Image (cartoon, rainbow, N blue to C red):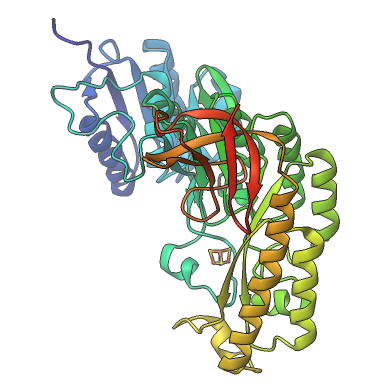
Length: 438
Ligand code: SF4
């Protein structure tokens, strides 16, 4: 039986740049198995790539959208006139999506939402969930590329550019595919997860027939509906992060936040040009823990940043203790070629960096040990990562793979990676727990 092939029509208006955009969109869709229809009648959905250069071009674009609506009725609008979304929606409220120029990903994802691609296991080399390098039971979900911040020690924005968020429907479709393929834990990553969608002005996109905003809270909420563990990495403590804490308290999203604070002393944070450096972080963390007492916070810090005084360092140690930072990574400051921080005065000698690093790691270890001790006797969920003759090793909701501690369950060698089991904590060390199956 021949399979039914999803088919797309395109009307391309405007200049050669717009034509190149159309070619890119079609190339991507063709590579995914879509057929291109030469007429309206044969298309499942029609893309109108508009021009907005002159009033006459805008008029022509509106006419083209109108024709596609009446001839086909399922229309995705993109291109230069797409920046006037309100005008287009006033005239044609039923268009499926509207995006501006060069937003290939958004157009392709609107096509996916309107007519999903068909996966043919005999022809396609790549499985629907893509190729992954992680074990089968967890997967990283990249939601954006680049960063709008300009931290003085970092050159990522000059390497990768400003924030470019993936439209939320595209992220959610990928997450669904991963879950269908057996993933039990999704790890949300980016350079700045809480800024997600800012570049798209939090635009709505169509996901399973309903509009969803491309925004941090909506992302966490929708992922929380998939029935798997959802872990949020690289979150900065902007005020709107408060909104996701109730999702953690309700068990929709793991009670875990990976927040790379890097420091706690205001003058150092200012010199680092850290995002959210003016927020009252300690107060905020207390409020989060009132709502979700189980919240674990992971963070990384830099010691020996230019200008860091003994007082700054003491402030940092106090912060780690007072905030009860569960998991800590620490780096000794090193200049990176091209970073602005290289020009800052007050370089800290290597031996001082070393002392501060050791003192910080010791303080962090005490916090970690105390927080893990308090878990003894509790029943917890454990996701199993590996099993050998001695037993099973997994992680609690407070441990991300590769970077945090683990939970050892002795003698249980008939469990399998990806199993999520209930266990009672019987022992705790500085970074790890031991538990027995319940
Ligand atoms: S360190 Fe700062 S500039 Fe670099 S990626 Fe992170 S938030 Fe962006």
